[in-house]
Image 1 (cartoon, one colour):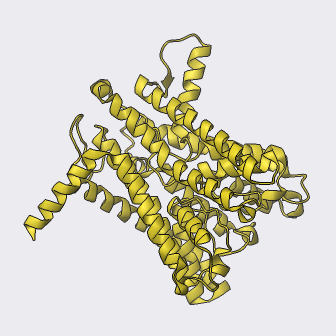
Image 2 (cartoon, helix red, strand yellow; image 1 turned 90 degrees about the vertical axis):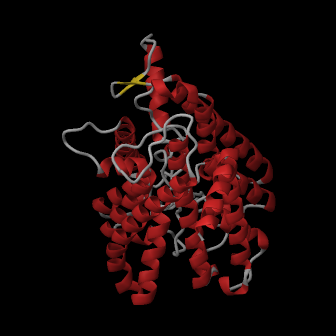
Image 3 (cartoon, one colour; image 1 turned 30 degrees about the vertical axis):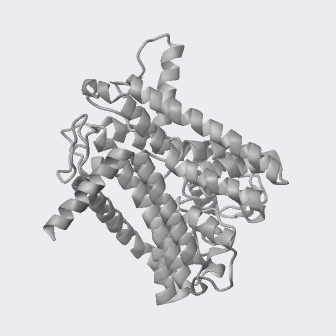
Length: 450
């Protein structure tokens, strides 16, 4: 048994040397194909669905996007919903694990937790470290999801009964932590627009999941006599600023809209709705307001938030919060005619800046190409197709109503964008990091981009 285990570890180590991004893409493709086959089985659906619908749902679940062409709660049986839950969990935690292991394999360091391996430059990460890291990522995720399950059950068990209420709580817990945005209600969270528990627990889950494993570990290991890691500072500060500014903007822009906030009588409910709608573009995809009824300025704000996304090494996508702040720091440095960008008193090195530029340029190009393709295949206005393209590439899951009306070609475009948006940012960051691994020794700290 020991010999077989060592043989398997050696084979996995050889595979990791081939190309981690290739392994990530191949793993996601295998999950999508397996999920498609399982969702097409008779016991998975209440009524038969087309292969294209099964493929779209599986792709959306594995990439933890949340865009759907069918009503999840009405279309799928409990078995089908279980399959979707497993696909969301595997997709979200799989990418989080890959992000951590890729950082380690490039010589990155994670302070604090002794169970994580701090690789040195030019050292290939051993498969044992992969398993060990994956185990710790899963353990942390299960603990967080288990804690969140209790308050959600206090809402849904009285409403749906024990069995259905607990299932709803579990499904939405996994969906939220993995930033998936799948719900079992046809109107997402619009029925709970003023519910303080739903509007606290669900955002807490997708914000924590979006922070990333390394940031979460940094917070858990924080001591008052020690400064926070630069990446933790940037992600926490960026998340707070984007959430609060987004909430204020949405409240101001929608307060007089009779189709959204103006239709909600209580001020507290309006603030809850503004809060959830400002934080969910961090790639979560839940909504408590009708997205199709939002004003154009609000849609532009949401598109910017979707473009930025969550933190590195987390369950969310987008160009990442750290990327945005690195670019802002570089821009501010240029305007001041300085030579070295600085963020939180930490100099930003060339590798980090190149990662930020590469991820951002590719995201902009991807959104443009996706918008162009949807403009050709779909009969919809430019704002709607641009919003859909941004949501798909950022694996967010918000839609102005176009998803369920997509043509066959449009569904293919969205599926490609969801897959690329999930895999590409970290792949680009890994490739840039690999190319500049020789300069790693000079870095004491590094922001994790992608």
